[in-house]
Image (tube, rainbow, N blue to C red; front, side, top):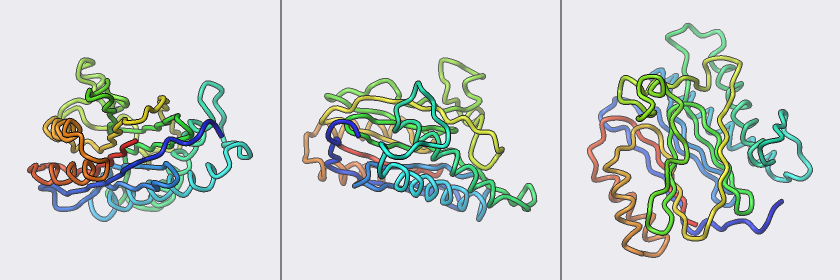
Length: 250
């Protein structure tokens, strides 16, 4: 393990179905383990819902098992250019993809589900993120929002490189769990600072929602008060799409 783990002073999750008939987005975290996942399912009910749930449960289970002793455990695939935490995350998403594919096996095309997934793991002061699909991550530091930590991996990259997340027509993920056996998660690694706010979200989050998070951060409340206030602010927004959201305050 690296230096002493960065303490999460507050963590909160929020999900809503918006105007959609079913909720296919899931947020899952293990605060004491420094593990957090959001998944944006697709395929309708029950397939999309189940794919997102399987993805989150599989990533969380893998991380809790394999990351319990990073020094003693080697991932299935080891990339020399990632940290050990990044490698464990990489393999957690590969493992989750196998689980979603197993769920889809033998089902007709209209009965299958898939999911975009963004997972994070904290090792000391290192934040490792693994992404497949259209989810997003931001960091607030010293009252300012940093450049987007994770750019959605969607066809928006091909439509308009200046807005890689795309609009409604560009938000379709270029890859996702449950689509194929071959998977190459994108890995991002950052150093955490005390006072950082980390936001993970499925693609339902709006610019207005992020502005409200920034507004709460500027109020300088306690971490727990801030986390609760963010949820109240998100509840005020009339959402069209599903959303699953995680906030961690360090």
